[in-house]
Image 1 (cartoon, rainbow, N blue to C red):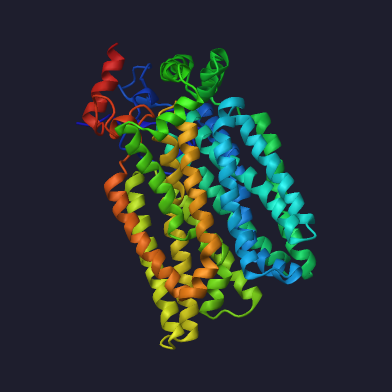
Image 2 (cartoon, rainbow, N blue to C red; image 1 turned 135 degrees about the vertical axis):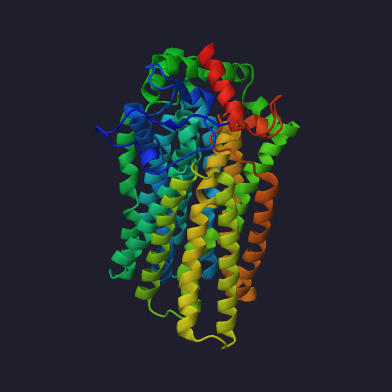
Length: 531
């Protein structure tokens, strides 16, 4: 027994399908309050919300909210090439290089932690604007820095801005999109990170021919351009309806819901759900939230293990080390010239971006957990192959040309598997598994772990390579990645198509623990129609 066929009845552009339908998204689960009875009486089908102009509006809001992630990606990508020229211009040591590269992650966690309270205080929308403004200030300081100390000051500001931005966008997107689209749209921040990394690599290649005291400054200055677009974003996107309800601004929340839903009845229905969930929040405060996170119930503890664990494994397998230091890896494999090194990194960025698009197509079609299995297993295989090829080259058992080919193939394979699974899905899970009252702070806590792990890996990578070789470092990453496969199997449930409220049952909350199967879903939908 299954649900009747579900598809958006509203067309885009006079007959073209909506974006999710065009991409072939088919979710096993349909959120009960994301379907409406067939009011035209033309065959008893079910209309899925989010079609027509409301679907386009939600899509646009999700894209605009994700623009700050271009800044993080650009900073990560551009610094991999900048560091070559900064070292020549400012004559910094290897330790200073590690500090400059790795400190961004440590600094950004301060912004992420602050963003939880800030987004609850001033709103998700204006927190997005604050993130862009702080990053702009940091990028300007870095561009004009006459010394390493001033460069680090700019890095501090930029990192705080990035930390604020990467925390608030997934929360905003999860609160404005229906469950049937949430997986795809919550993946947008990751595709914009990948796009930013690619732009950073291209910037490295494009400006590398300038004098050494100018090229890295131009590369960093170019990062200000994407952040300027956020000023336009603030004029377009609405505030999160969930946040408005939490502030008692119900009329404004209803006005937003009318824009992102299929009609007045649907908007009123979703508003009632949000108000019910917000009643629990209204009796608490920030201290109570952190107290609940630090002394969690069994259900919340399982959520935290899943959310924080995925954030941890995303970084501890070495993605930032690979992206930041890909020129070092390729040089160790035998690529000699700077232009060849930077060209190879562009290939890495292109691979990452392409496979993020594939992830967005598949995340709601086949679910979160299958993609995580493919991603973590693929990462493990690529890391093991990269370590083996570098070790064989060091012993003279592999020709130089073969080693270069293997390095490029395995590094591109690594970022491809990363981007098709754990890269975007870590934030999809983090933004959807927590109850409303805990969401902002819990996501901030997970991002803090993510940034700490990223910083530790990036800041220690060169030293580890010096101690055990590049091949040894990636052997360790491969072993850790193998553990991530086990973690996904044991701790990560399938959340695709679930409402934010239904997901709690997957972690043992409520009477209806366990997945909602299609027969149950049909019964619930028809029950709503009869009532």
